[in-house]
Amino acid sequence: MILDEKRLLMQKLCRDFAETEFTDEILDELEETGEFNWDIFNKMAKYGFCGVKIPTEYGGQGGDSLDYVLMVEEFAKVSPVLAIYANTSNSLGGGPLMICGNEEQKAKYLADVATGKKIMVFCLTEPGAGSDAGGTITTAVEDGDYYVLNGRKTFVSGAPVADYAVVLAKTDTTLKGSRGISMFIVDMKAPGVSLGKPEAKMGIVGYPTCDVILENVRVHKDDLVGKRDKGFGAAMATLDGGRLGISAQALGIAEGAFNEAVKYAKERKQFGKPIAEFQAISFMIADMATEIEAARELIYSTALKKDAGDPEASKLCAMSKLFAAEMCNRVCYKAVQIHGGYGYIKEYKVERFYRDARITSIYEGTSQVQQMVVSGNILKK
Image (cartoon, rainbow, N blue to C red):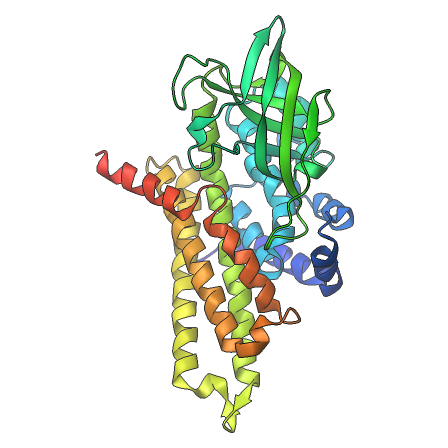
């Protein structure tokens, strides 16, 4: 896809920011401590990245899905962890409010999320309801002007630093499966909200993840997002945008690993010449480059079709995540292989890319769930 001048400027801004601000010192610190870096987050917010996709009337930049994809891709080339810092507010955090929040909720919450003053996360997955998100057992029982929430959400990215959470809970337990589920905005400092221990993860270290426990948490009816009992459909619509974002993240990770592999192949000499001159290596590089380009074209075109209201958008978002995530893992595998033993050493960037790549085929719907979405869209016709 040929980007217009405005897109190219957006892309360059994100690239320059990542290459300048995402220093090796910061990336090493993230790996060592696993803690959220507030300084870099506040810089990203100051540049408007936290609200790139949020409408201007709510404090955002008013960009579209392609602007969002370009930002995530450029950031993930350098650090997929820091890419998430700006991704969440434009995706799973602010997404539900942009899709079905009312004006009062947008004014109250979205503006602070867009400017980085507050962080909002998404609570869907439960210990017994992962890929089967419709198996939610967290409950919300009406009590006067409030709902009382009880349950446990797991693998909540950003929960330890969040101010608010969008929580999916069952409001009608007589309905089976995904029916009877509603969405609520929960203040993370409200009585009855507690957190589990931050998870020690393989990758994406520096963006903390933990469980959120809800024990008789009172949420006012004003914080019901969308229609009662209709929250699951809105959550799935939110995930369409989230999957597009993870596709862009996977693309960026693959590009970052690919660039390191090409650089290394040109510098590393064996048998008296650079390993890039060996057909085995050069063919691996050709395959990597081809897959990256294919993923880029699919993701960019899907972003445009999603905003145009294409009826195939949901399927295309799932296709994008499926292809990009699996491509990312293949490319990172080859990048490590090209580095040989050095690719296994933490000093080399491909080691980190390899670990970070693995989650892209798991979170926001595993590759197998994407296959279910794609095949379901095709076979129902």
